[in-house]
Length: 319
Image (tube, rainbow, N blue to C red):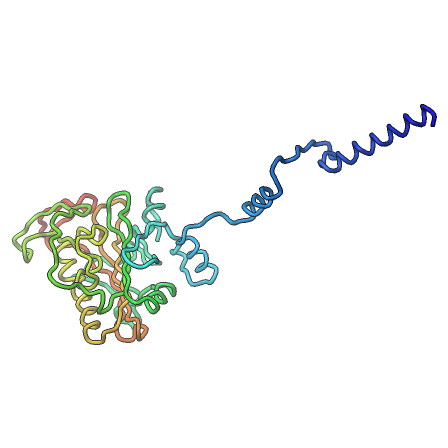
């Protein structure tokens, strides 16, 4: 072989090697790409990790499933602030501040009920919401998931965390014979809910303006000195507004031994510390609300007392 022929053969082999290396590294497009130092196992693990969806909390995953199935309402966007006392499960103000939009989804709206839509107090301690011929005391807005949980698990209770202003928020419970308070109720005087400025007036039975109102009554769920279950409520709200409905639930359970799905939601006006009232929703579980069903708003006021809801301070009034 001549020297010239040998040189051409070497050149041809070198060109083939270069082209092969370029094809292997993918650098023919003009953008050099470095070979990854990871092993095949590492590459497979990375690919698997990249293909996974972002991590979700249990509540978020549950919400996605409900939205996809069409059982969640638009207000059920979830704020992650629910805390369960027992069990595993767990609206936005049109004039709320940005922090409230994140932390307080039930400030003055809850599943389509706006504080601005509540009629002014006219002498009755409560007003029915979403009432019709079948349900003169109103129709609750429980979701399918909430109702199914009550039918499958029986008694449970959960209370929302306090918001950034220290205000009590909503509570949900399935109440039955096994959840009722037993024995003598303990002392709760050490707890001062948001807006607690106690005053005494001679014209109020018991004289005290404010009570430490339980969202879910101790007699129904056994929760007493639980800060997330207590709010600043007037004697009128506690004794005249809420108590008759709590006694109705208690009587139903005693008479039937059945269960009641029950939710209480305080409704605040923007950043006021004292709620303007509370929404009570209840539905008997075993008969799908045929025996017991109501959805009412109870006014948090006291006749002849002027309340500054922003602070809780108050004074006698001739109105």
